[in-house]
Amino acid sequence: MKSILIYGAGGHAKAVIDVIEKAGECRVTGLLDRIKPPGTNVYGYQVLGNENDLAVDESVQGLIVAIGDNWLRAEVAMAIRSIRPDLPFITAIHPNASVARGAEIGEGSVVMAGAVVNSDTRIGKHCILYTLASVDHDSSVGDFVSFAPHAATGGGVSIGAYTALGIGAKIIHSVSIGEHTVVGAGANVLSPIADYSVAYGTPAREIRARKAGERYL
Ligand SMILES: CC(=O)SCCNC(=O)CCNC(=O)[C@H](O)C(C)(C)COP(=O)(O)OP(=O)(O)OC[C@H]1O[C@@H](n2cnc3c(N)ncnc32)[C@H](O)[C@@H]1OP(=O)(O)O
Image (cartoon, rainbow, N blue to C red; front, side, top):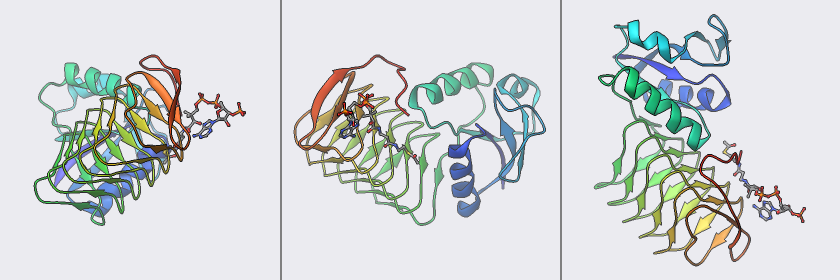
């Protein structure tokens, strides 16, 4: 069984730990974090240090970045990649998730309980599909994207990198959502949404522009 570290020590990290424990393919040896000091206990695991400690840790065989914010997760993943280019990012898939034949899940991504990735859909790197999220057939999801619980798409949908779909957001078939966009909770998206925007409502409308990295959680 692979010995892995989890980067992050907040609520999202706890949810990721549960997925990894249930999947049973990796053993979590500890957590890394920039905020909580070494020795802090989180969900039964100790914070061991931060990303700089990876440079000297030869026992670790993999890592997953468990930070909910898409932009921060990307920053940390890139920092880790430059410190340890050899270290694989693991993919965590809950045993009660469903990943169809022909679907691909990128490295560092997490698929939580009840989530569905349907036939021939591609999920990018370091994405999060929270509880009961659903991405239907022939869809394409960029890197660092998140689906909050119950967010769902029809078939043939395209979601740009760094975009966040809020809780319960629904995207009808064949629609494209741009990159760095936030689709608000409960939105019903019936037509394309541009890059760098915040959209919500029924039907969803682009309410305002947003910048890369702007907080949304
Ligand atoms: C496991 C997890 O926890 S995963 C995370 C789950 N969390 C989510 O899904 C959160 C998703 N976030 C949202 O929907 C947020 O409301 C955002 C990002 C869309 C907020 O966008 P902002 O432009 O900053 O909206 P702001 O909070 O300033 O509200 C502006 C107005 O829009 C309304 N509004 C905000 N979000 C929504 C929404 N999703 N649908 C309808 N109206 C909304 C507000 O009520 C407010 O109305 P008012 O002016 O009449 O008071």
